[in-house]
Length: 75
Image 1 (cartoon, rainbow, N blue to C red):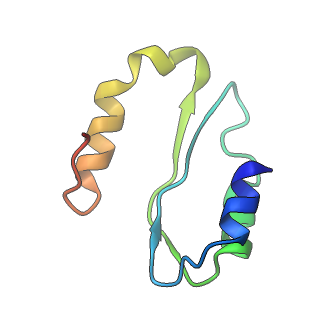
Image 2: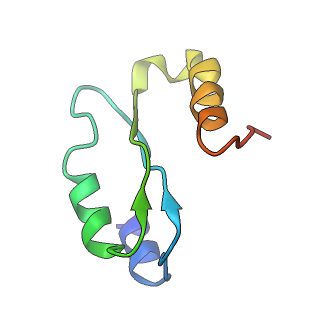
């Protein structure tokens, strides 16, 4: 609900949203539909589900994803 409230209270018009979340088999559930509803004028560019039990070993994967999105770099 914290993220939902944040999305409701900010204008994401013209912004890019890259959702990511940890899970243990549910992927992102209905999160993308909720984000699309709450931020209809935003672009959802990429979806990044991360298996929670593998989160300690995903730094390289996350860094690669970030680099691939508009040349952003992990800081």
